[in-house]
Image 1 (spheres, rainbow, N blue to C red):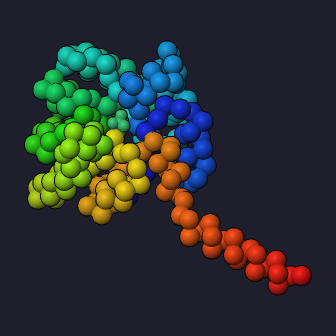
Image 2 (tube, helix red, strand yellow; image 1 turned 135 degrees about the vertical axis):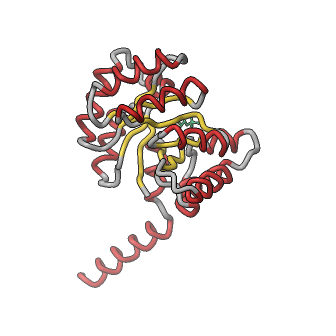
Length: 216
Ligand code: G3P
């Protein structure tokens, strides 16, 4: 399972990268705005330089197909590792088809149903981003969506990768791994939470105390 970080914060990207478990980065317009980034192309370039060949999702703002194609082509020209992130609308699906034919990778975002995910796969999206946390927020089980997409993609051998998004806590990561999501993109705070277990801390403390006693 690949781990992506869902942020535009350079410090967090660098720190996650230093952990040696980072496979890519996803951003969205809200995350870019949160960091107050105005020159977003320069910012994506900086992220791409940190990531080397690993994928970096950069989202279009346009909502018409031509605008998405124009903007997405511009984003793709920043670096080879840019994945153009496109919302799951009728216009978006058309743009994804265009990019698939050009060999430009896309991440189809704002997916909330398995039939939407089927459309994205048929259009040739490289990633589909089901938003599990936002479904949980409205009393729908987000994880069921990941399971349904997994079944459908396996039934028809679609190569589109399931990128579990809108992850809020480590249990989302656990469940995504259990149902076979290809990727989980998570905030820095969730990556950090994955490391912690109170029994690890207690166990380490005891090992060190015993070692100290034995060395006296
Ligand atoms: O990047 C898309 C997704 O991960 C957003 O998450 O927490 O805003 O629902 P959230």
